[in-house]
Amino acid sequence: MENIYKPYLMNISDIIDEAPGVRTFRLNFLNEDEGKNFQFQAGQFALYSAFGYGESTFCIASAPTRKDYVECTFRQAGRVTNALSELNVGDTIGFRGPYGNIFPIKEWEGKNLVFIAGGIALPPLRSVIWNCLDLRDKYKNITVIYGAKTVADLVYKHELKEWDARDDVNLVTTVDPGGETSDWNGKVGFVPTVVEQAAPNSEDTIAIVCGPPIMIKFTLPVLEKLGFKQEKVYTTLENRMKCGLGKCGRCNIGCTYVCKDGPVFTAEEIGKMPDEF
Amino acid sequence: MEKTLKKENFNSLITGLKDKGYRTIAPKKDNNLVTLDEVQSADEIHFDHVQTNNSIKEFFLPKTEKILSYTLEKNKVSIEEPEGFAVKSVVFGSRPCDAASLPIMDKVFNWDCSDKFWVERREAITLVTIACDKCDNYCFCTSVGLAPDSKKGSDVLLTKISDDEYLVETVTEKGEGLIKELETVFSDPASGTPDRQVASVEKKFEIDKVKPWLDENFVHKIWAEFSTKCIGCGACTFVCPTCHCFDVVDECTMSKGDRLKNWDGCQFKMFTLHTSGHNPRSTQDQRWRQRIMHKFKYYVEMFDNILCVGCGRCSRVCPADMNISEMLEIIASEEVDSNKE
Image 1: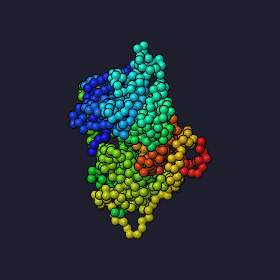
Image 2: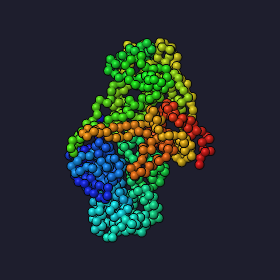
Image 3: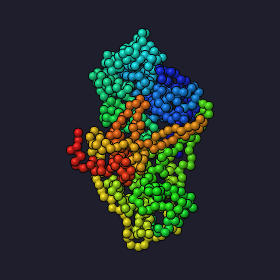
Image 4: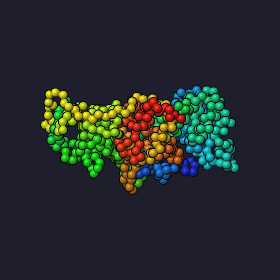
């Protein structure tokens, strides 16, 4: 019988320092057959292990359209992420996944997409942004509104430049007041305010929001004001997890298990959950 | 299949099991506690108790168990899978409530994907349960749809029919196989109806009234009232035969390590604490509500089963004297809603 807790072994083939304490790993399967058989979809997550320290849960930050590797972006915060950040190119880590549900990007075909992210919450959306950009002709207007505390805290700086340069992406970046530098060309202000100013058209549009709870709390009413229906607003939740398989018993919000029923939910679904976020 | 077993034959039974390669686990007196543990002979087995201190859970879901081992060499990692964890065993003399916990937990460990550590131990262990001939005020099996002589989850059920004799009823094929393996220690039952000595456990509440109330009352002042005494020690979750939440941690030296699955509990603050410091269940009343909701609402919605067998251990062991059946009585009673806030 298969051991559901056994991770794949992955080689770290590249490391990018995104922002202070924030790092991206590019990972390749050590076993080529496992790599060939591996499939995931945008929105899914995995458990990454630093052997000797334990496992940590992050979304898969690369797009399923980019084959042969997976990427994850994490902030150094606890025991496992600190151990992960000690690792170098060529080192081995464990990877269990993909787990959880997906962003229904097939259903979104033919619609406008507005991605709204704050801080370290761009990685979960990056997977779906690149997925949609790689299938660009299937979607109408694509807008990305991204904010961080300071200019230094913005992740994927090179990709932000790339999106900014594209005619088929409308990128709005912002930093919190005081977080700007003298050469900052983006906006200054909190994400909900910037969303209100940018006022994306809600007609035939899907909004995908991810960020710290406080950002989500203030962004959802703005979207509502702009005419977005709750079932057209998507987000991805995170809760502490140990198994990712609906057994260890801690990631539930009421009857909803974030690991199995999520992590992707609509604002409508979240509205029906008990207040225990 | 029905047989009888004389108390004087217990020794031959335990010796017989040993000869057939079974490890035997049975209630054993350990200072003032009666604990399920490995025994070598029937002399070690304790019969005159209401309930063992520990449940049978730890023989299926150990307090700590290796789920993988690894060796680290420079930047290379090799993984080894644990073997030999499912030891052919008989659990002898545990209670019907404990036995009933197993088919309930089969659901969580098998839904969507199976946990082989649970499944292989389940296959390796045969359960010979003894029906309760006494009970105490903490017992409430009859309130959760069970009985002191329930067969649910057992492979063989023994019921006392006189001071020195038990009626032996096989429940599963596995149980029947076991009895056949040790045929000589059993006798054929005498004709007539045996006098089954079974405890009478008072029904304390109507379980059908619990979930409808929970469905409506996620927010209610009763959660704080119930949990003011709670010190968050988590003992209730550890002695519970159906609490199955676990943690996954690594233990490692420079070159070798194990990944372990350890018991964990929803009453601990750390259980849901995010790395950011945010905690979705930051107060004890939220954690206590989670325990009740998980057992009597969430698990029912997911698996169509209450996650409680009425063994009463959580209340017996609670240092703050919290009593779950008293709380369920309140929840199932008419007065509860006069309390709503």
